[in-house]
Length: 353
Image 1 (cartoon, rainbow, N blue to C red):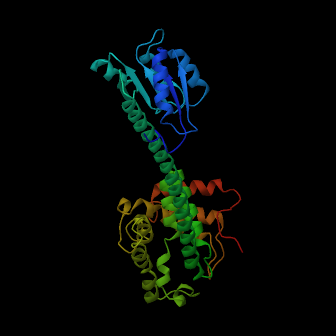
Image 2: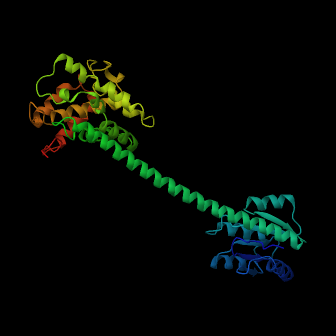
Image 3: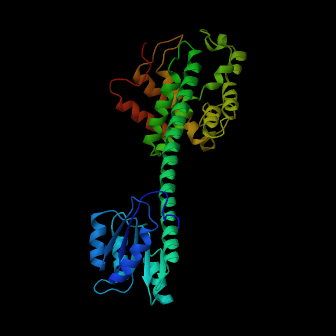
């Protein structure tokens, strides 16, 4: 007969008040176990529980009818012990009714051996339970391993995505010598507004990434127009007004993050309907875009331009306040005003490199 468990050494505990049964079972197991395995014996349920409490057991053969703590109660107590939720427990009985058998299964029994038994039956039953336990242990280990690998891949993908988005944001800002860092600041301000609005961490992250890429459409605008120091002509301004559509088109290919395209498309809409490119009004404008609109306008006023320096904080606050309900969503504008009032040292602005 092949060894009961060729995959590893095991420890089997036989709990039975009948010494003859202990001897027979022990002899059968010795002929089938690997050389490093061991067989432990207990003549009562309490003795068996004491053994289990002091060392790890891989399988329990448990007699149903015993004085003191019977097999059913011993089974319940085994299942309540740390580390024994899934350990195979095979019940043995010569008088097992279907009702008692069902009760044993409900309490965590994994299999039955009816007395009197043959050596082949007991060997095959134990072999099956040990192999199932071995496969279950290895499956759990493999699931944990693959889960950890998936987590690491997810972290790596998030890191790569974050670095890629930042690289794109810096590429956009590099086209305009006067707005370097604009996209990162808009993203930071947008995320803060989202947080103050009570959004979840996930929503704040979506707003942040959308803020980083809101101006990506400027890639399609000529440098001569982007960096022009004098007033734009009507034709040039129409070219600039194309950048939300260009950006929306570019970002629409990132199907896993559709909000990126939304932020780029609608961040120049106005609350009063006089914005572009769609002329949407009020809450017709996507919420995310209304947040970025406020952050974008704020950074424009607090950044250097070819024709002016950073505006004084009181001027910025006044213009933001006056734009509430016309250019800006009143709610998100009120949050920006709160941010301004909290910024006592005027740190939320562009500084010289």
